[in-house]
Image 1 (tube, rainbow, N blue to C red):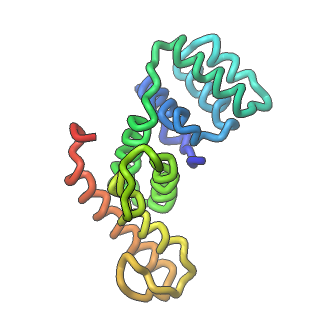
Image 2 (cartoon, helix red, strand yellow; image 1 turned 90 degrees about the horizontal axis):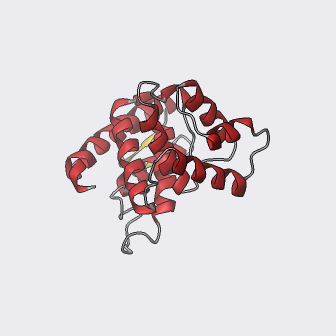
Length: 191
């Protein structure tokens, strides 16, 4: 499941946020408990449908019921859900753009990319490289280095790092450089 950040939701364009949330929804990457909070945010920002109101009223959302209700909300609001491939590509691009611009969120965004890698399995031709269908294998290796205990050999930087702060700084910088390179390799029209 992805770690949503409600403080980053853009109240200036709630329908765009709805489409982003809907892409995570298509992948079933949103925990059921997030739906009422997102429904509250939508209602607060002027997006209304009967199904959104019903989601907002739920005290104990459960998977099957919340998914059907949100699907109904999308229909009521005239939002066509993305396909699984479109959803994976949209969210991958959003995560990578955020990696470049949000240095304090590097680890969370890398974890979201790892979640997307799992959702992409079977959607793209098989390869020997982790996350290759999305071309995120270098970023996944950086995440694995983040997850290792310090001191340890960091595969992505090719050396041992003893200090945790140095590790975060080095890997964060490397992740931002790789994300910028990914954006150059994959212009928006290509995705």
